[in-house]
Image (tube, rainbow, N blue to C red; front, side, top):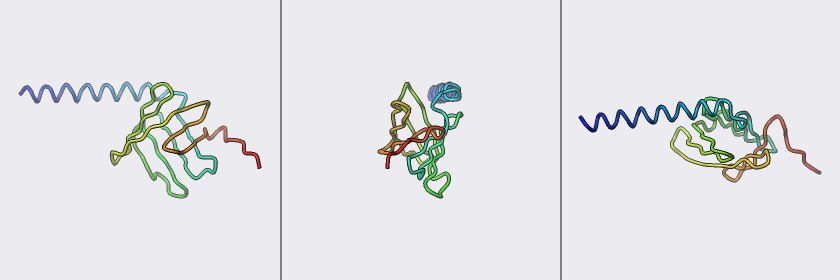
Length: 110
């Protein structure tokens, strides 16, 4: 019985924490589409705390949850894979990639 009560408390706490994170994320300034300079990777941070990443012509190549604390982002995809990244000067550095907000693509000198 004690284990069932403890499990219920842990579950309720996790649900409340996830709900709080979703509410904070919904209005977060980093929500939106982030893309690599060549447009190959499109990483959409959704307002419900989920992300959807496209690669080339493959839509929804990766999907999962994310959390933002300050300028740091943590990801867990739906298979359990984890990754993280950092926002610096309007740029998202994530898993060796550099992504820019879609509304402000980088300027490149040729």
